[in-house]
Length: 187
Image (cartoon, rainbow, N blue to C red; front, side, top):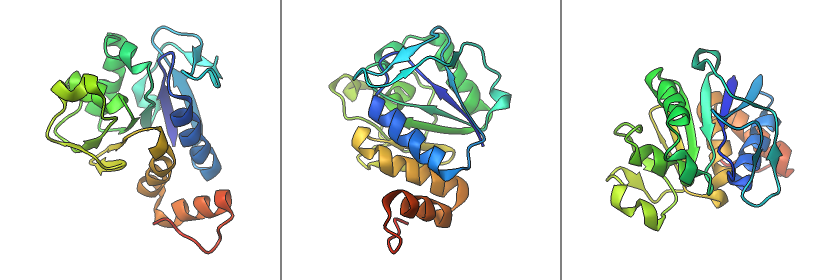
């Protein structure tokens, strides 16, 4: 599995690191690449995480899925036509799209998101552009889209992605390895 992570500056640190930590623990991701159409370095909104290994050009055919963390950087994403076009290319190619927090709002507002159910942050600024497909669920799976509500949902989001990609047995095994709860499953 080759994953492209689209970053805007001031992404949500919790959403990025929690989700990617679960992916890394799964040992199923051959490559995780950070991308932005304009930035060589990106800092999380809480100044905890800095990513300085960002590529600025991408061929979507080289990746199986894209992950878009939320955070205040989504305000920039709303007007970044190059990054939005990259996301649209993944959607048009029927590749997996993982988006959390305000990122699904951006996809709905810009009409990139097709007619699918989605979870997103219940922001005041997205009220006017929310579609009837928006749910209040922490995580929603519909077609090739997996979306989540907020940073608190990041753990469930990560494990749900593992379940959808690699099966519930693998997702449960990763949960057990991380948590030490060998007798507990989450799916």
